[in-house]
Length: 147
Image 1 (cartoon, rainbow, N blue to C red):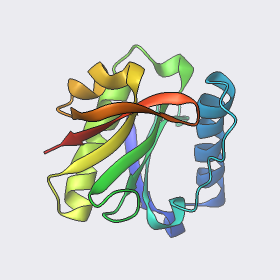
Image 2: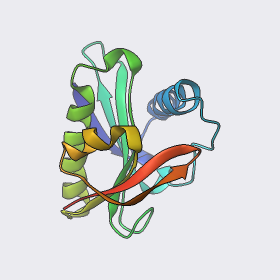
Image 3: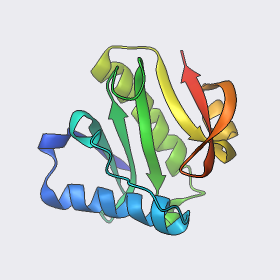
Image 4: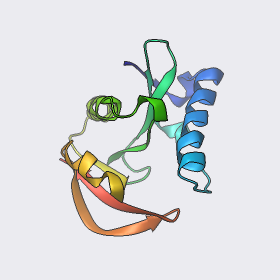
């Protein structure tokens, strides 16, 4: 997978469209979750775009600075296209996101709000669960931290 990291203002209209289309396909359609995806955090975040060999966007996440969602830097809106799952794309995306978050925000601490069914996935990447699970948009989540 080829990755491109861009600040919001560096995204082309087509890149932004494809990222939002992928987020909608996964979070709204696939997970049948009626929620407001565009939450005014995109503008202050970096966007990690993952392209396959055919130059199609198949993976995406946003990297949020300290103080936007949490006191610490954060990674959110982690998505992998349905046809690209089971091939290590999610692990590759997250490893790159962790690396870029540490570099861009000069930090070794990252907090995420993980869907509970992905707790082991994030745990295998070094994140540790904190506190009790909670509902976010009617989906069970858990706060996790990487130090």
